[in-house]
Length: 424
Image (cartoon, rainbow, N blue to C red; front, side, top):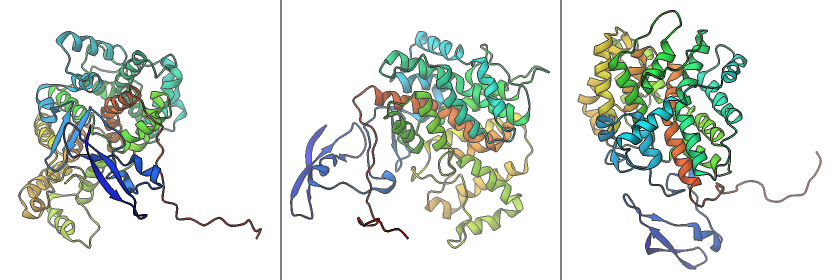
């Protein structure tokens, strides 16, 4: 609500008033939409100072290390909730009753299977195709298989689409992995939890029983939960922009997956593992620490600090506990995990990192966990996409539920002036 105005003096000398909008939490926002009537618009590369929407779903305070979903802190949710309950919260706005949760979990569980024809879709992909390339195509293809959910104006149809997406993403992700290693697809099992079912489809084979470790199952669920939503990031904004055209929700999420694929967005935990491989052994760490401190050296410690969180990543503490549990449970002997643990201790004790707020973030710990479980780095961003699907579709639903306009950013034109055509 606007209860005050900001004044702006234009180059013409005209003074205009711009409403100051106040949200329930966080900084006030100046509504500049009226500038266009005066012949001006704002210039904000990367939209770093621009709010494209108002939302009730997620709030982030990067300076204070706060992440809230519908008002609940991420720490409370990670401690007391699980991924599917958090999905319910993000979509419906409130935590479910016991009966509501049971009905929601049952709905998701019974939507995990795919149309059998979709399995043949993977025959068109080369065996070494990147899993994210396959995910983009396969999720987009869902719109052809579930064309009955096409009326985005219907809240019920949007709900069905959301349930189908959340349910089928782990199945598709596991199929991408199985296709890449030449193993047969594993059908989902309704007797397993969301996280356990994903691990079963990833690592199970028809040859023998596969039992999911409780510690690994819990860590996998936490990875899903901690990545469920992160406000108006690049991929969420992509989903919203695609959705503003009235596009099918499966196509919108496919667009979000494409945006997430970029190494500057979803590939951070994959970059952590590449860095650990580059360092190699614990003995090499001092040399790379010196390189990280050298402003003239391009080397950067990946998984430390965060673009949004200027103090600490509230998800990291939760993820560290799961990381410690998984490594203890599996007893994995991997040189890069030893490097990771030593790097963590240095970052937490070296004044250089403390002064610059370069603490281990959620990507650092999730990358270590996924590696310890045996998931290849090429699948890391795919798992991120599985986690983030509920955030994408919740923001899409919120936009479609209210009056909205098609997204249309403006530009500052710096090209040629009008000129006559002359053949050369």
